[in-house]
Length: 198
Image (cartoon, rainbow, N blue to C red):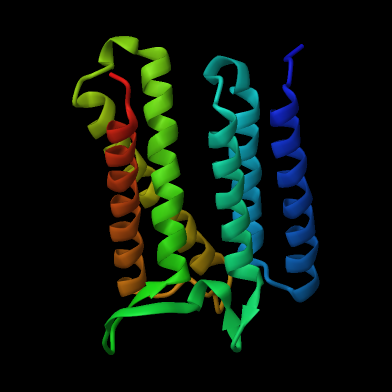
């Protein structure tokens, strides 16, 4: 039987609580688009859970992953100014008829795929320790996180095909999501490299 630490149990409890709460909320308001995301989250939670002992994720990483999930659920569920939190405009860095930077959605993309790159870096070092100190241990997590970001966009496209009137956005939104995914992954690896003891 897998031994679960107190910190892992705390993260699991916190995550289960908000996933259950948002699931009930999305079903109650008829937001079936986000049911696709909840199923995806449950799969990801299961993957992390089943790999706990093999991966030995640091507690900070587990909390960071859980907070990403919460930010995502809140983004699609918390109403703001007649829309949802995902569409909240934070800082008008770039604004024209096609796009707006910086929105809540873009910050969550950068954060989430930065965390993904950190997780992939951790797994790479754990299972292939000979990569320590090489370019591979920093470049591969960035590229892999970008691949996961592209997978996320495929999931969003699936939601668009399955559910009418989604809040996913169009071509510019997809392109910006990919840009912020990459930016988050690069920033994360720069931070990991700067803090590395190698």
